[in-house]
Length: 312
Image 1 (cartoon, rainbow, N blue to C red):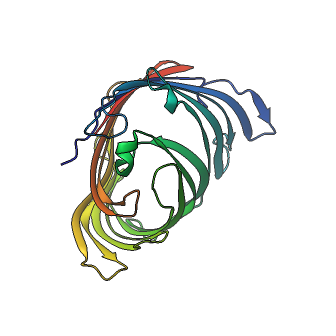
Image 2: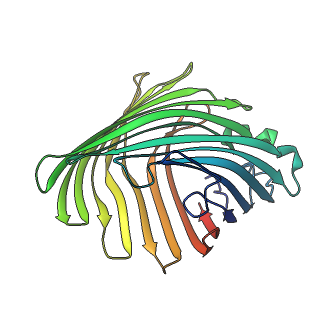
């Protein structure tokens, strides 16, 4: 059994959009902000190599610009963020790199509907199990686009549909590129004014270059909204089936996708993300993956907040 890496991190986020004064105001409904994020992280197994583990500290400084649209005054709002991260390691300086992160989203709201479209390009430096012997980290590049629409059918019932496309490619290692298409469909029933019960289905297709492709069918129920004044969640649990294009036996698993937020204080927010899902490994293999991410964010001043997080 593979040993999972311990990953601990803390960070400072300075001048984040929404807190700081705008660098530039554009017309009546747009503001441009300068942002700077910084983080320090420790991991005890940097490259996921069980025979030769590397522990190290990683430092990231990420300056950027954020364009905010709407100012809360119109039915249309949006955000375009462009960031460039400088990644440095205390001991394993061969892994030092720079990463682009460009994301955008537009939100629309009407009398009976809400809708959004999003897209972007994100670079990540990550460990990969199938190149452990080479003691390297690889660069993952993801371009994505998607949208969601939710429509109120009656006073208590709503329906939603979405779609997303991801193109994932790699620099380094023996990873293979892939395209991922996903379409979720959900029905919402109002349990309280702030909490909906949901029943849904997600279809996902993963086309992997020069190897097996996968079709995933996720049938689920869940909760979406506020459980209490301080506790809210977006959770889906159900059964998922994975079909293999080479005619191999279908796979099935209980899947869970959830994000839960707890307002510890007026300035403190605890976030817990649980995920059990099918994923596709670097060389195209099918993997059942279970993960947890817990983070705590505290606002020190309107221009400064810090965050610590733990993942497994």
